[in-house]
Image 1 (tube, rainbow, N blue to C red):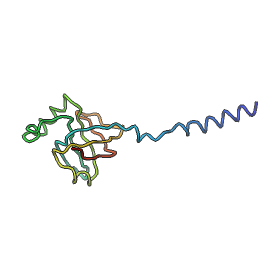
Image 2 (image 1 turned 90 degrees about the horizontal axis):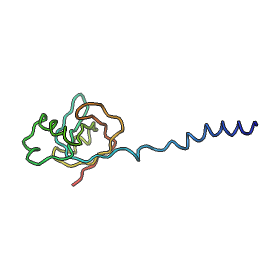
Image 3 (image 1 turned 180 degrees about the horizontal axis):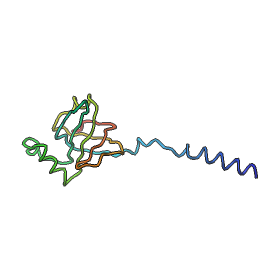
Image 4 (image 1 turned 90 degrees about the vertical axis):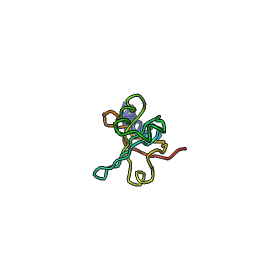
Length: 118
């Protein structure tokens, strides 16, 4: 009987530790075009739309981009200063984002990693 109780206690301690996988592999990935950049109080942010025509990108305003965001996958992304300075409006990016997001329209997510795509 003591062995069974000991086995159950060990199982309760060991099994949860073994099943705790690295969630980084499962972060959501988004692709789109950077249409707007802003920095406020050392917080750097991109607005990324999944699809946008070059003409809309050239002549659009932030309000136009937010309106376009209602009909497609779009989000603001917090980025670090280095990425903020190296990625320009109009560039396509592939973003791995954190699971947490602020509920707004469009949502605000935090970037885990970002890369330029062609």
